[in-house]
Image (cartoon, rainbow, N blue to C red; front, side, top):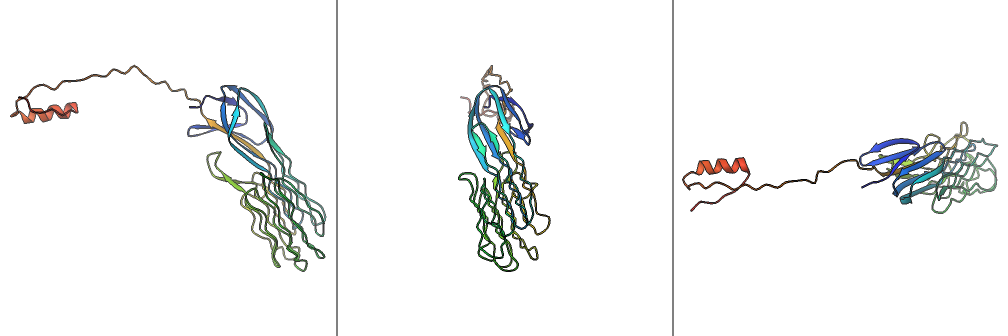
Length: 289
């Protein structure tokens, strides 16, 4: 039975649980009780740069986070801004709750850029007309690496996919950008949602983009921005969600009196009366002597 009472964030109920959702910085204030929480912390996704997508934000989940009375500061990340074919995107920022600190997703890189943007999940390698590119690494326990251009350095100049919290981003092929890595499904808010997916890469010619990772894009929590030749996307914002068993206020009456009833004695010829008494009293009796 839950014994926690707390304030902070947007509070909802789901069956036996109380849920606090933080989409901006705030305070989770335990006003009474102690116990274990479920906690989800997701950082902001990385912004895309032209055809090169961003990686998903760092993803951390605890099924049993011990807590006592007091105030706990919560930081909620912003998604990284998008860049362009000539300008780096921005990494997502970090989210945190207590000892849980999720790292922002890596940003995409402009065309013909060397190097990489690591993060909760890595940004993707860009398109290039002259050399092979590689995706950036993810953070262990939070996300996965992005993909590269796979050595495809000719027209249409594809970019790899951004890393996701569940799977890595894919390398590009000769004709399309790489698929984004999938985010992780979690039902802490009462319904299954994918968090921190990697953005899809595209091509510098023809804008032939790969499959976006589940939970990617600027409208998904922790989603990496999808790459496009025109109109590449910013990363999605972070979120912190806390869930625990609702404190019970029900009172149980323990003053229960048990009563027994004795069946009257009937002659065996009075079968109708015996049957009637049994039906009314939910009992079974034998023949009288």
